Image (cartoon, rainbow over all chains, first blue to last red; front, side, top):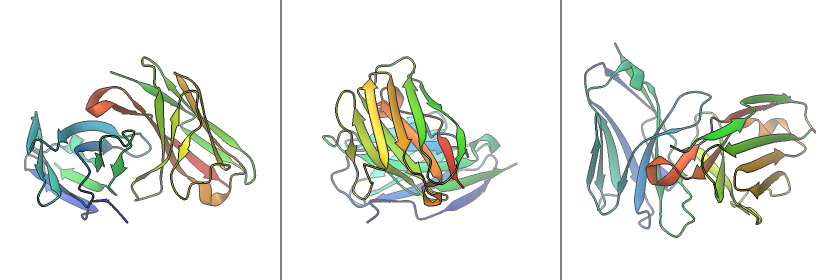
Length: 113
Length: 115
């Protein structure tokens, strides 16, 4: 039972355009969500997070939107840059769970020059 | 921010041997370390949670006698894959509480290949 789902294995966008990566979750107990970026053979790097009490969090070119009723979140990257090309993982956690993260399968983003 | 140093970055071993992977907290005392495994094109799957000075908590389906975790100090946690088999070949990553993003910092990962 996959509690965090990233249904698009890959996404390709042109440089300068917006990249939208989607994530759905099934566990209503999740109250904190994170996005990580990962290059091959490296550990994930934190990008941005959002608490369930918010519906939007912005940090530079990255914005995360949370729709609790739909159990859906998305990561917007604008403008997209070739250096953004990587695998993006959505992760979720809930208080009291010893902070362990549940990850989606990831989406490979390719930004074409 | 917090830094986790993970070694080795890659290792090739023969079937039946044991391999130890180390994760060190360089500038943060980590009471909790998480160990993940990632198969190609799959998500990071939590294997176990280790707490300094106590026994690790393993996720369902993870053999604790095969994947030995030791967290003897606040700065060092180790994962030993015992009697490794080819199906254990994977990418292993540690993560500690502490640092940015609700307190998670990841090591750089270890690519284990068992031949």
